View 1 (cartoon, rainbow, N blue to C red):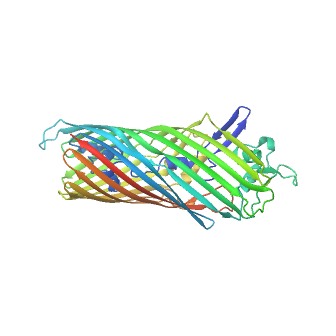
View 2: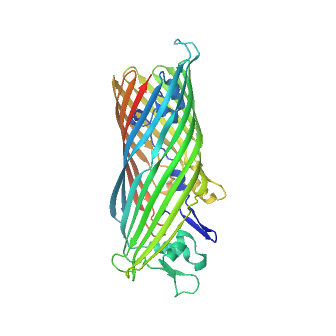
View 3: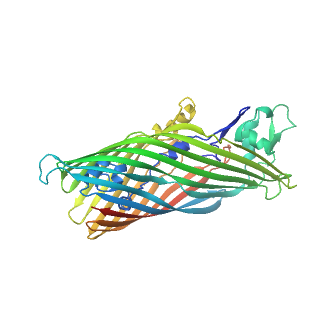
Length: 485
């Protein structure tokens, strides 16, 4: 993802329109985490076959059919995200903490059959509420001394060959209007030079402040047939709310670029939208000690509106300041389709002593698409070549020490990038939890330590600019409080 060059500006007599859509946006809204109740999160998110937990409504809705009582649950959480970066040998760390409501929900359980083993419907259950997939809040700081290039080199590269009257967008028009690039009077034709000399040392930094979350409202119906087969369906109404504010700064700290002192680029990006999906699941219990589950999630098509703005400021040694800005205050509408998901699950019930659970989730990231297709044909081709199909493995165990319980879990969320792209965002989650339960009340606590391997990040798109490396560490604490009747 380049220096917020998700922006592409078209300038006409009718105003300025900014576009901010890329494969990175599709990935952000598709990659899963393990969010929901504290019980499911403390077992690595591996409750697909275990059921009787509100997380089932967003994983395998057949788990809803395993409820024998009605339930009310809510789960506040706190997440601290730490970003460690490396750029030209300079290491930086920044972090951000947020309070969130991880989930809330109500389950109504209705017994309609007998307690014997007759092959008949035993329970019909209904549930609704909210589960959050992922909390997107973070703060990133990247900084280092660059002796290879300037962001001005990127702007010049885009402006060359174009008359000043036809320059457009953040790639050429805004830096021109901010006096950061000027016509090169020593060359015939349409050529430009930058105020900042690319081969001289300059301090570059970028701060990215992100907020938001991805979650869904769930409406679920499930049935228990003969205490052997459990079926369920969930209508998911997904909601995206994401905001990113970034500031790039390039400073001639050694006074090597004539009258130039500093260039600042502020970029604001807000994306909101909704989507719909259907989840279908089944759990089979051939014996009391084992459960097997399968769930399929249809594609989600999100209708999004992006609002963006950009401001560039050039400061000179003479204290003169030049500024240019643009925005698309009316917003830009488009759609993103996320891929289907297939989840296979196994659960082993170890008498009254506890359980072991395993989930394997298959996602083909090549199936992400942006629409209208003719507008995003190049982006969709990039997605098809840049990403791969993956398996996400989740493991968990619970030890029952009635009325208390101890839980541990592990999840490996695989790298979605192809080998040719040479980037790795594989995420490893280690989870732990404790809980207390009686017949009418429960309280559970979960702690999740999540680390994503170093990802490549380019401050701008120039040939000899090395990428910054970003490692993400998330620590999440969740408390679920529930009442049964």
